Structures are given as structure tokens and as C-alpha cells.
Length: 118
Image 1: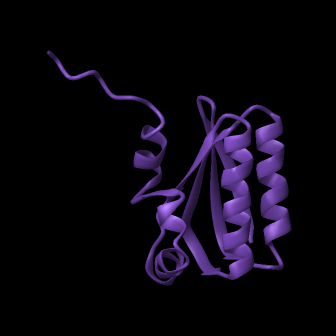
Image 2: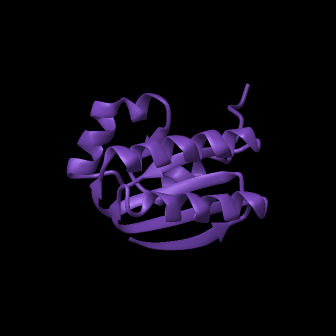
């Protein structure tokens, strides 16, 4: 697994490339912990290049959302496609974590839009 992190304001955006499974989950969680420790409680996880997601990967995602929420943030998933999207749906992850079609919409969801005019 390769993991790239970038920031937009106070949001940490993780791009995951490869497998998120038992062999890589601990590294993923450590990277998330490091960002949360630095004050980035709002997270976006880009799954566009994830080729395999195991139950350990799902557990890591659930631990990530719990960690971010404990620190006053939240987590969004972006670009879940094909088999990965199917696994997330089967596991019911999409009922706990908001899933967006791309990183831009996931990131934008943290910022309230203009108020409707009266």
C-alpha cells in the first residue's frame, strides 16, 4: 500500500493506493493517528486506487472514523468503485460513514453552503 497525504485547510486527505488489508491496516492507522495528533480531525479517504479491501481494512476505516469523531472531526470516503464499493455496501459502512463520488465533493461537504434567501 502506498499512502499519500495532502491538506486542504484543516482537512487531511489520504490517497490510498493498493491494498487495505491485514498487512497494511496498522500503517494506515498510524498515518491517520499522526495527522489527528497534528490537529487534522477532519479526514477524507480517497479509495480510487484501492484494489482490495478486506475485513481488516474495513475495521481500520471504522477505527479511523471513531478516532476522528473523538477529536471533534469526522471522516468522508471518496471514489469507492467496483468491488470496493460493493464490499463497503455489504458491510454497511455507507450507513455509518458518508461516501462521496470524488474527493472534491467529500472535501466540500465539510463547508456549509450559502444560506437560502428568505
